[in-house]
Length: 205
Image (cartoon, rainbow, N blue to C red):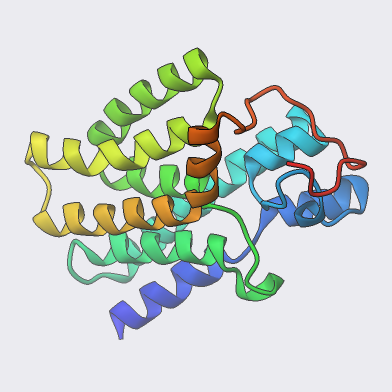
């Protein structure tokens, strides 16, 4: 029952899509109809600007943190909060409240990983941020972050091996959600941070 409730709580928390809600509150628009069509912080930045994007980023991170902490409070084995975090990411990507059309889960992943494996997450995060600053590709930094964190979990070696496997699942999930971005990166067509896609630019990104 502990595992079931942890999964359920994680998924339902993840399903609260703040990008969609902020879009409706701020501009009365469905963010999924504009820019890249992705309901996440990066598309919020491109379509609605810095203020709404920062709010979405913080709230998406916090729901990952909340999923882990609530699961930890319920009890169970050490890996169960990580499983709750995984399902928070799944909920963000495929939210039950919004027709299973959500984001790509990176901000929520940050919340989950930093709460559970802070040092591996921080090391991967520093490298990812440097890459974003150099290349201005958020998608590239996101993929590097999710890809390196499991590696650092193994390298540091003071976490249960189950943490590595669940982090690896998150990496694979991230690769799948970013498959279009990977194709655009190879083709040189990926949007860079700072490029605007206003609400008039429906689905042009």
